[in-house]
Image 1 (cartoon, rainbow, N blue to C red):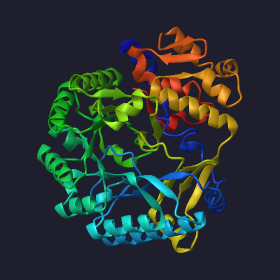
Image 2: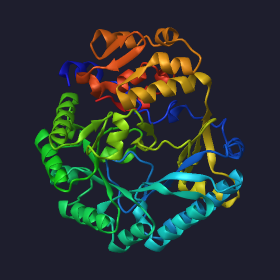
Image 3: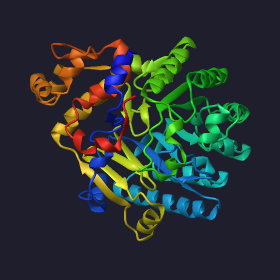
Length: 450
């Protein structure tokens, strides 16, 4: 990484490009009737991914940017689970058959906040309404602080085979500042327990740029993490947006590292993980050499969706739950973000869609280009533009931001082949943004590039 480039481009607020166009461009023009039409038009040969959002936690982590709420009692969770099962049935009836499913992801919030028997029933509802392939990856996000032995057993019995554990930092000072005190022992117990019941794929989530965090504490967190040898690690930069996420106002601005300190933290974490044998993948992932994600990256088969980098190559994504986003061939849909509004729509017999986006041919072309840049650090514009019936020269002319990136040595362009230089890969979002025709209207909503 080059500090001069971090200083030049690092302050810019850019999307993480888990979709294109990004969610700020969704509108109420796409509603329940449109979604129902799109569901009925799903090709008979299609395979799908399912995402289920569980927006509850036992306490609020002050850094959190997710759509979540604190639930001290179990009753609201049970009501929500019932709504999820109703939505699953409603969507499957619109499709009209048991659609094949190759990937399931439970996100949150804290999905393991559910009662173990309720989780088993929910997975049973999915298997009843959809044909879950024997090879399907079933993944779940976990807070190790609240994971019980009974829930671990339920995950194993339900066929869960991948789990992402929130770690963030093992520094006690940082943990106190973000209201997430979590011991190494809790993380280790969760990791070992999951492996014992057959959840073989273990991911850790780390964050840099947190209050009171420094290079030394980042290195200590990496050292402790690799003792447990997770298959993958995600390393995210903290996005401080207190005007949007009001609980982040509990974090003191003066305790946050500046851009160059964030840059140093990102560098040392990445180098330490590579020294430990992990392969860097895309913007923020690291995986062991034999991991399916590493293999997909090396073979050019890596993808990016709302869960980040993935080996998921299914044709469409169906989202369930409050704020859940789906992607069908025609475009994106999103459910009502507030739990009560979501539950009321489902109880009334309506799909919970409140907004979405219908893709244009230009959107599909730019989405393909951006995905390859984010996944491969480069793109063959000739190949992709030809596939979409457009000349690469015309696409380059529509990307004026690219010229400064080329001049600064961030990008190399040879004919129609574009590559992010090795020392500039941490700016891959900046390169992808050069092809974003919708960017200017939503920049204030995104996190910093570094």
